[in-house]
Image (cartoon, rainbow, N blue to C red):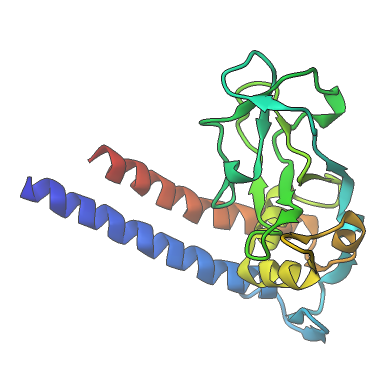
Length: 230
């Protein structure tokens, strides 16, 4: 039992180190790019210092569509399509463990595909702007009306890179400032969201950045699974 406890502690230490490395990478590569590959820099209002070769674009120009989800009634264990809700966005992932199902048919245009990004448009100020990356869907799945589905223009944008940008603490702070406070909930409307300025590297560098961050994320996930098994 002592040996198992020590193994759990070692796994937890790797998990902590991987998360620390991921946050450091986010700060570095999303703001300054791949180390050693940029000579000049420039300062952009609200974005700070970025590589001179990167462009600055409104979020809307990187997307193919921004769509509201379905407002059909939901139930547990029904035969309808699963529907992702805000609580199903966990640490940037879209979980499929306990999805409620739709009580009526849903238009095909409101189904998700791998690579979509979901953004919580209405909630408390602490949770509005929360995002989740859609991957490894088990069956045709839709999403609730208080979420927005962001679908990238693949010729210009790597979806996982854009997710990492939106999920990063600095961008989450900016989204929080963008939210309009209401009586009980804050709200981000699609028009304002599309105007959010993003520092955009070339597509090839976007992909390299996302692969680098994903490799660290997968290291932490592997150790988390190992710790759970122990």
